[in-house]
Length: 372
Ligand SMILES: *[C@@H]1O[C@H](CO)[C@@H](O)[C@H](O)[C@H]1NC(C)=O
Ligand SMILES: *[C@@H]1O[C@H](CO)[C@@H](O)[C@H](O)[C@H]1NC(C)=O
Ligand SMILES: *[C@@H]1O[C@H](CO)[C@@H](O)[C@H](O)[C@H]1NC(C)=O
Ligand SMILES: *[C@@H]1O[C@H](CO)[C@@H](O)[C@H](O)[C@H]1NC(C)=O
Ligand SMILES: *[C@@H]1O[C@H](CO)[C@@H](O)[C@H](O)[C@H]1NC(C)=O
Image (cartoon, rainbow, N blue to C red):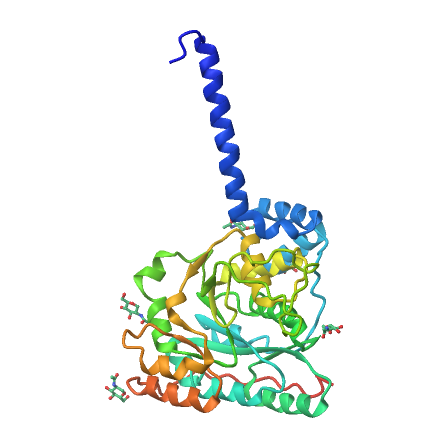
């Protein structure tokens, strides 16, 4: 082709072209995969590389979580310390009842009725017993003492509340999310799957448990799994009147990198542990769903398994879609009216045989003055 060019030059030309192509491909790859992190300050990116280099020996090995966290935070002072204390803490809930599945539900102190809904439907003791699952509610503190007193009574009755001493407000939801990861890591780490939910969600627990036992889900393995409703390119809200308004200073890009709906996601327990540790090294960002399922998941180096067809997140249409779900694909519903959740759950329970003749027993510890 180039008769006058020597073989050496030809080889050189090939090398240069290959290099150029590789650089181009790499930059495309960077744009696809790494753009999300470009707004992070350099020190975060640096500590991230360090944490990544631990691999399985470091943040993946949780044979002694306390020792690991101590050594990790000594070597790498947290950029996002989580210095809150549990003020209501059923520490032995899991160690004494030994579940295989644990659901932690983000709640708020005043949401007593929503918690009752969960306890009477998909989180009922009979359901928990059937699948060897336990449900806890995660929350912070509010200044209204009346509300906190009711919460204390509730905790003494059910023993399923976990309360940490941060202010429970929506700009603090990321603290709630980290509190959940922390509590499960510390007190409930020895389970097959950890499920995060909200208190306005209906979970078809029977269908979900079947699914978690399916060959497809089993093929994902028993580590490094997070399953969720994944959004690939969610727009950042720039409308100043929105509750979810985010300024350009807080987040320059107009789209979020992939992350999940925070309504429900399901993880293997190693993931919970590593995400908690990674949170200590990941700058605080108040949009909790993105922080947890976007940033932290990216940091621990795993990818979402998409369960998008199982979600119905439009509360207005929940009931209609529930009734029209002939393929029985939907498992997670965002529902506005509690009465609708009860109706839907009754339908799901019709063909089930859950009863509590030999249910696990659990005597909640009493927290008398703990929240004052
Ligand atoms: C975790 O660490 C312990 C103690 O250092 C070690 O014995 C064990 O082999 C490690 N496990 C894995 C999976 O790396
Ligand atoms: C875990 O490590 C901590 C701190 O080194 C130690 O005090 C504790 O006894 C260890 N626990 C187990 C179960 O080995
Ligand atoms: C978040 O919680 C912290 C700790 O309780 C508190 O100091 C802060 O005011 C809270 N922030 C908001 C926006 O509520
Ligand atoms: C899980 O699936 C297997 C068959 O694949 C079945 O034998 C077993 O009963 C199932 N377990 C549960 C809890 O559904
Ligand atoms: C439901 O439970 C009853 C009583 O425990 C039992 O007789 C019946 O066979 C069960 N039905 C199914 C579908 O498991």
